[in-house]
Image (tube, rainbow, N blue to C red; front, side, top):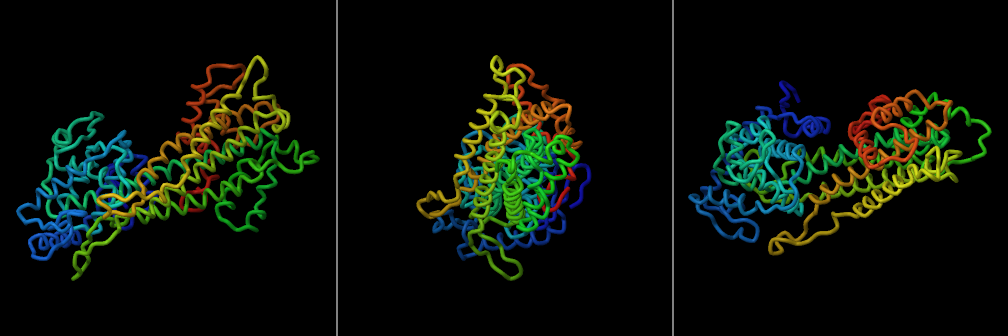
Length: 520
C-alpha cells in the first residue's frame, strides 16, 4: 500500500485490516496497483472467447439461476448484462451510509483486481474513478440474503456505472447519469459476464461487517476506560487485574484487557485509600471479571478481523476464470457463510460488552452496592432523581441488543425457484451491527457520565492520572449533575464521546489493545 494525495494504491489479495479501516473512516480514494492489469486482461480475453464459442458457460452465454439452460446469442450479450443490472436493482429500505458504500466499492475493486472475474480493465477504471471523484451510488440496505452474493445492493451500485440508478455527488442526490456527467465520467456498456461479476459477490455483507467490527472495537476500548473509571468510583479492587492471574489462564485477549485495566488505574489515590483492611473480600463480577469478559470479547473481535480481512481480499463472484490454461468454472464463492458467522459473533460481542457495562451502571446507582455513594449519584436524593432513568435507558438499550444478538446465519430461506436453496443471511446479519453499536455507544457513554460523577464524590481523593484525563474529557462535554436537568442532551453528548474516541485518546492510546494484536 502507498498513499499520495489521499489516494491509496491497493494490491489485490494483500490489503490488510488497517488499510480497510482508512478507507472506511477517512474516505480516501483508492486505485489498484497496475501490476494486476495483465491478469485482468487475460481473464477478460478468455471470457470474450467463451461468449463467442459454442460451449455453454454460465452467465457468459447463458441466462442466470434457473434460466441457465437458456442460451444467449453473442449479439444479445450487452443486453443480457444490462438487463441483469436493471432487474436485480430491487433493493428497498434506507440507503446505506456513504462510508459503507465507499468500502463496498473498494472491496469490489480488490476482488475484480485479482484477475479471476473476466472484466475489462476499463470497467475497473470507471469504478475507481467514481471513488476518487466522489460519485457514491445510493444503495438501499435491504434485499440481500447473502447468496448468490449481495445481488440487489450490488446491482444498485452497478446501475450507476451504466448511467442508471441514483448517486450522491458533492452532497447532492441525483440520477446516476447526472452524477457521472458532473464528475466528468461516462457510463459503460457492459461486456460479457461483466454485469454478473459486478453483482455476484459478498462485498456489501463484508463492508457492513467490517464497519461493525471497527465500531465495536472502538466501543470496546471506550468500555475498558469507562469500566476502569467505574471500578474506582465504586472503590473496587484492582487486585483481580494482577498479571499472573491471567497468564495462568493463557487467553491473550484476557491478558491484554487486564493489562489495560491495571495501567489505567495505576496511581489512584482512591484505590490506595482502601487497599488495606477493606471489609469487602471480593467485588461483584461486573468489576472483578472484566478481564475475563472483555478479554473473551477481544479474542472474538480479533478472530472476526482475520476472517473479514481474508474475505475482503477474496474473489467471490461466479463463474471464475482459472489462471493459465484453466477454463471458466462455476463454484460457490458467493456464499457469504464466513461473513454471516463473523457478523453473528460480533453481535454477541456487542451484546456482552453492553451487558457487563449495564451491570456496572446498575451498581453505581444502587446505595446497597456502590460503597457509600449517594442513591442514583445525586447530591440531593429525593427531590432529585439523578441518574435513575439514565440507568433504565441503559437497560432498555442492552435488552434491544440482547434480542438482536440471536444468530442470523442459521435462518436460511431458499430463493430463486429453489435453485439458491441455502443462503447465509449475512447482509442483514451484518447490517444490524450498525444499530447495535449505536446502542452500545450510548450504554458506554452513560457509564462514563456516572463513573465521572462517582469519582468526583470521592474528593478530596483523586483517581489515577490516566483516569483523571478520561474524566476531564467527559467534563469537557458534559458538566456534573448537581441537580436534575433535561437529560437526553447529556446522553447524546456522552454517546458522541465514545464515537469520537476522546476518552481513549485522553487516557493514552498506548494502553489499549489493538485490533490486530498487541497494544497500541
